[in-house]
Image (cartoon, rainbow, N blue to C red; front, top):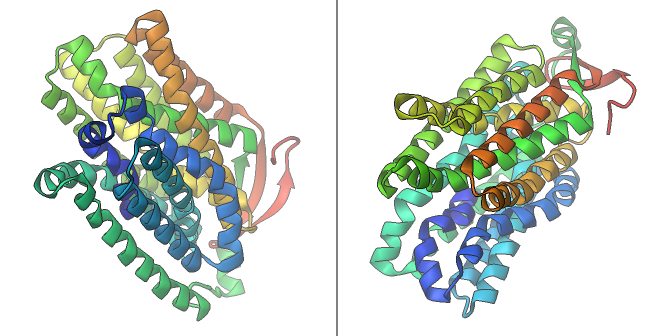
Length: 395
């Protein structure tokens, strides 16, 4: 996850070099992450099915080689159009990473530890973004932006090599658990999971809000709170630091204290709503910094628990396909929500309106997840099987 994010979303770290090289407009710079996630949106379900069909190791190899090839084309692109097209194609490979890594992260992990394992895995996203910001600009200064892309390309090829190793072990049965029937009976519990629509809506809204905060927070702080650009960048870095801590903390908490991962997500979203409301209300000084840390901890920290909820909803069926279907909503939110909030800000001429809209969207998403129909599944510690369904619960 970190390698893939470093190579794709890390391009934002060298945006000034790209703007000069291709005479990119501000809009074209802004759509770089949208192109990545648009490609991921298109491929998410097919990639999930492919993972179930050929195995997670092989799917991981394909995804890493696909991203590496696309970034290689971008590195030698002669024109703006060729560069942007290569970034969009890289998104296709990026969209195939999550189904494969989800399967590998949970195949031998009992359910009561999956949220933590998946949360640790999901810190790769924030880690890749942080490393991109720390490493790529300085490297571009030293050797040029085209040559600096050789580093993420090399890491992707190394990751693909790791995928080959995993594929061989997968074929040898390393990732196939055979728990005893007695142990399964002892650990069997019944849990309720939300239906497809509440789950998808939650992912759509929270992913869109997450990328909106990542994209707009620094501009907001400079425009309205007289932050210097370095100070605003430090604030965003603090939010990402809180996000890394939040992903692990929420995963641990969900495994330890919550029977249902959906309940954890409701608590997380409540914290996100509180932080966004504080920002919308014009928090200043220490209150603003607390809101920034809380928005990172909650608005960025939910992903691993959401992935664990997806494994519950898979209910013994193809996890790769279920992951791809769940990610389709996440990527859709990333593509649509940030531009919508930006349009609200431009149309009304107020950052407050944009943050209020984000807060209300989170409130709707968490209320729908908390109050929507549920499906009961029976968990035996490592696998799930559907035993009862509420009307309208499954999609």
